[in-house]
Amino acid sequence: MPARSLTRRQATGLFLGGAAVLVARPATAETRWRMATEYPASAMPGEGIAAFARSLAEFSGGEIAIEPVFDAKGEFRSAEIVKTVAAQQIEAGDAFGPALSALDPLFALSSLPFLVRSVADARRLADLARDAYLRSLAERGLVLLYVTPWPPTGLWTRTDLASVDALRALSVRAYDASSTEVLLRAGAKAQNLSFADAMPKLKDGSVDAVLSSGDGGAGRNLWQFLPHFAEVNYAIPLSFAVLDAKVHRTLPDRIRQAVDRAGAATEARQWEALRTRLDENYARMRQNGVTIRTELGPAIASLLRWAGEATIADWRTKAGSAALAILDSFKQG
Image (cartoon, rainbow, N blue to C red; front, side):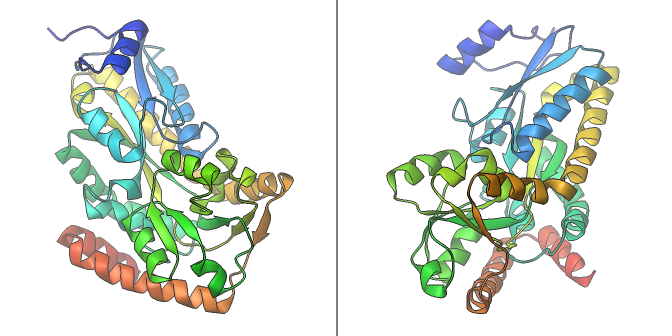
C-alpha cells in the first residue's frame, strides 16, 4: 500500500536533511502539500498559489491543504522546481517558464522578445501552446495545474534610461537565455539570474538594472535600489504551476477532479487579474517614488527590436518542430 502523507514535522526534516523523498499516496483527511515559488506572496505566482489553495480546500471538502513556500525559501529557484517536484521532494510548485528553457526551448516561447503586443495576444499564444506544454511536462513526470501570466516586462534601473549609451552602460539581470542574448546584442552587460540570486548583487552593486515586470519588482521592493522603470513591453511571460504526476495519478477520482477544477479556476482568476494589474502596480510604484518612463526613445526601441529579431532567429534553430509550428501559427493570426 502507498505510504501515508508526511506530517509537517517530517516534511521539515526532509527539507533540512534531504535524506529521503516524498512517496506518492492518495489524499486523506488533512493531507498537506507544500507548493513553492521563488517569488513573494504579493507577486502574480504567489497570489496564484493562494488562490489555488483556497479553491482546492473548497473543492476537496478540506481534504487537501496547501502549504505555500514563497521567496525561494529552501532554495526553490524556478529552474530547479520542476526537478524537485518530479523527484517528489515537494508535491507542487510554480516555476517561471523562461527559466525552464534549458529543459525544453518550448518554454521560452512566452518570453520571445516583442512577439506579443497585448494580453489578448499572450492568451492566444498560451492557448496555442497548451497541448505542447502538457506533453513536455508529462515527459518530465509532471501535471500542469495552471499557468500564470505576468504583466509586460520592463527595465528597472538606477538612472533614467534616456539614451542608447545609458542602456549600454547597464549591468542587467536578465531572466532567461533569450533575454540575456537580446541585452548582450544591444551592448549591455547581462547575466541570466533568478530573482533570488539577483537581490544580493543589487545590494553589492554588481547589478544595477533588472529585467522584470512591475509586478515582480513591486513584490520585491526593487524601488529600494532601482528608482526608475522603463516600459519596454518586452514580453508577457508565463509561470507554470505543476504537480507530481504520481501524486496526481494516485488520488481518488473525486479528489483528482477537485485538483483539476481548482487549477482551472485559478488560471481563469490569473488571466482576469492581469487586466487591472499594470495600473495597480504602477500606482504602488509611484507611491514608493519610482519614476516610470512610458515610452522608450526611438533609438533604444529600434536597437532592442533589432536584437530581439536576431534572438528569435537563433531560438528557431534550437526549437523543435512543435514549437516552430506554434510560433508560425501565432504569427499567421
